[in-house]
Length: 238
Image (cartoon, rainbow, N blue to C red; front, side):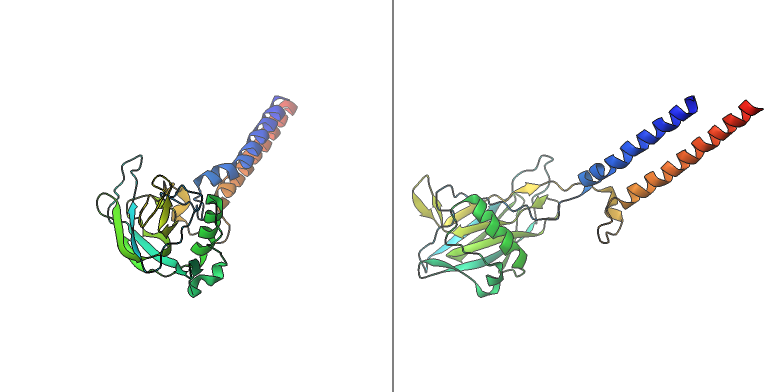
């Protein structure tokens, strides 16, 4: 009777472990979807501001310090103009029309994030490549008015960097004026360590090895329990 109780107890533990594996496995994965967030000095009602045609501006990218003080030097960032100013409105470049976004009627950060997500999927080119200095700063001068997408090419020793979508100029609510010199502080997130990195990922087989190991363990314990029960019955008969 005691052996049967122990056997049931072992089965319950194994079932709990099997249910818990997907949870542990998901903690190890890095989200492959873009965590698109917009970082700019724009706090006015109009998220993207149409500037005066013919004027030039600049974008300064400043990487923020990480909790573990990682190096911000030599990070490569792509700068792409995705929209120009034509007739007082934004006109998405023909190359990126597949994104199907209208940048002239964006009034909130959520709408801007949605546009950023769509543009990130179709933009493959690089108008300029910026390299950060030891302070994590990179600057692009003489930029025509329009909308620009910024994304990381090589993060070196830094953390993951989320894309940013900014306009030149942006409206500075503090001064009440258009600011043609834009400062961008890209969002950054730690790179999660994964034990499964050494295994090639094919399809959706993440967690396969965990299930295989638990399955083998389950079979071994069941066989052991059965053998013990049979030996116990033989002893009682003898």
